[in-house]
Image 1 (cartoon, rainbow, N blue to C red):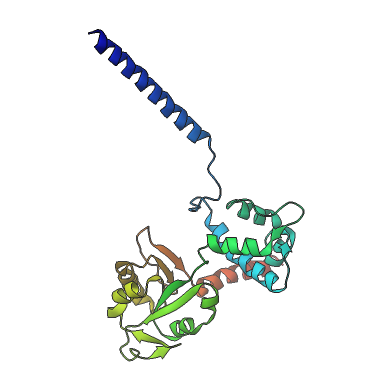
Image 2 (cartoon, helix red, strand yellow):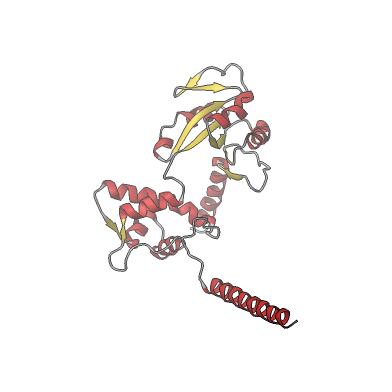
Length: 250
């Protein structure tokens, strides 16, 4: 009986020590601040992400000029973005540069490219090879920006087998197979608006996670799909509003 009591007391002490260690561990975890340079960057505002390519473009130009450092003031002057906003944008991803000496051009450019996922190449498919799709497929600037068009698709049988920039136009029936074999992660839709939703559905079913929509149609996609719209007409219409109000207030 005495042995049982001693054993139970020992287990109680062990349990208490374990509980104490657990509470101390939880407390220490709460006290550790989350690192700003987390690889996920879940809480970065979209507007900040949209400005990063602007910084990369300017840093690339500065690098070609042989300059090794750049200040936030000069970066702001060249980008049209205030130096305060630039510093705030960069602080989302960690600490860059030193006060009084500015930023290391190559280091900052390479880091921002890595953050954006541009340290490799993404394969892209284009669906809809009318005049707009043809222009997109023929554009050579994608490669230098980290994107490679690897597949073209259209519903028009007359286009099947023809080539644009050495890439053969395929039927949409080949979409699912090509997405898999060519590792296509991004798709550009440039079809007539009445076809765009069906195309988007096919892309999602094929495993594509990112869609760039060049049509005027508002697409419905699951929340896990990244969808961006490029609509020059809507942009021009918003510019007309500002232009009209500028003249009214002049």
